[in-house]
Length: 267
Image (cartoon, rainbow, N blue to C red):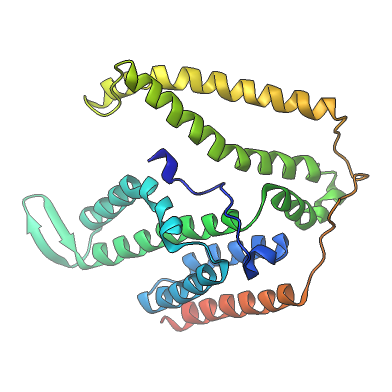
């Protein structure tokens, strides 16, 4: 389960998405997330499916690797679907005692399941095709107008990219600690909720210690290299738009326009 989380990981490949400017990919991911909530009918979600499938094909990331990240949210997905099916009022289709399934509940459960799934896949697609350094540069350039309000843009972008980069590292560390604790007789699967929570203590304590140690090592390494934030820093690889980036902006804004039209028309 731990190794199935793909958000924060980078998959090297020679694709159009990998070569795109990180600013375009960040804006495109935001546009896709907005469109997922703008669409509210299944024909609209069909358009989102076609758009997402096209992006996955262009990324050249294996489909099996892409959908592997969904295993980590299966439980959350099931809880969301069950609660929406049985707790949404409306036209009753099936009833047994106090439990009842409504037509509105089925539709809402389907929409929520699609939205949650597409949010995970869309976010994973961005991190799988963008290195942490590119994410930092892209965020900093996009948020640069906030410098006029004395917002520390560079520091914020750096913190976000480091946090994102630490996700797979901490997941790998968690997997190692779990295997070590299981070898010593720990049980993380059996028992009630309270017992499982108690069994997590031998996992959380060394994980927090490892996380703080890694953070301290990173801080010392940055200080040893005389790192400091600010507007006077230069970039080894300055960002600049290519023709493919301008085309991507046209595609994404057209896609968002279609989503808005679908919403207005009610399709």
